[in-house]
Image (cartoon, rainbow, N blue to C red):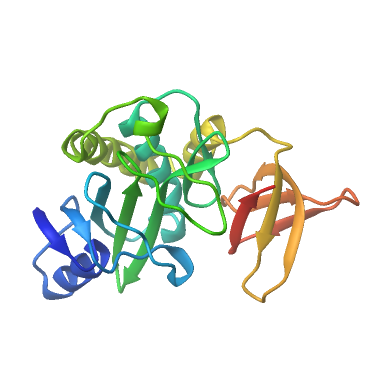
Length: 228
């Protein structure tokens, strides 16, 4: 499904899922959004030329934790963009160097999970808290049509692996595409505290492991993570 303009593709998909109008495998793409949003309630700047898309997963009995859909969405975005030098940052960012190239927002309603993807194809927003990058600034031209045509089948492949092989296979694939172990990170936690350390991989359930200065390891299940 395609629209020229909407408030938020995620909000639209949640409403469509509640009405039974969409099902797993359906995607909505907008040329621009007027009320796009990212994690932690942030606004997502949405000029025409970038990718704004939301897909739907209908959870089944025995599925891995829904939160880990962010990892397979990241893997699918990397596959769809198909450019060298990109990496994944836990839990939901695709990076070019140290700059954000794409982000992912998961929102759940009962057993429906909407996977929102925003990728900077032609434009890069000016964000106060992190550097950004676009494919165009990297010298790569890609339309939103090309991106979504690659993203939909890539996500379906990773979703199938998530269900059939489980988290061990997803964890291995994600770590292969992540920034290196030892990368300095800061984590802003839900209780308002901030801790710093270095990337030490993922736990078996795909939580973030942060190695602190005293040599201990902190496991992060939720939070906002930044390169430092």
